[in-house]
Image 1: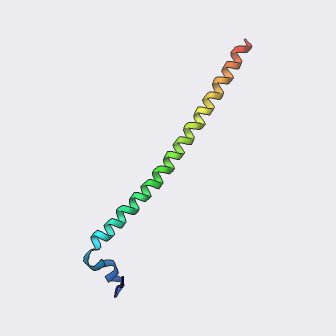
Image 2: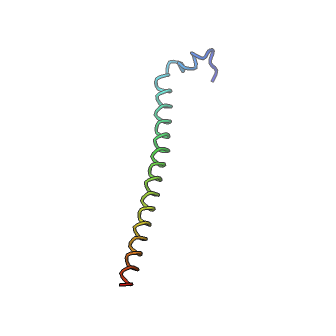
Image 3: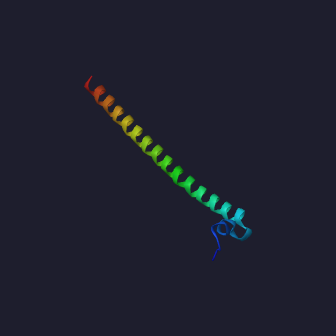
Length: 68
């Protein structure tokens, strides 16, 4: 598509609200998906780390009980 000027490009032939709104919603959703995935990943790794530490404490306690 050919535009005479940059302002004509921004106006999108009178459909600027629809075009730029669609771009905003699309990129906003993609941004949210990336952030959400990173937060979920971080939370999952923290839960795994805590579970591993808990299992280590339980095993250590069991070994201590066996020595008594």
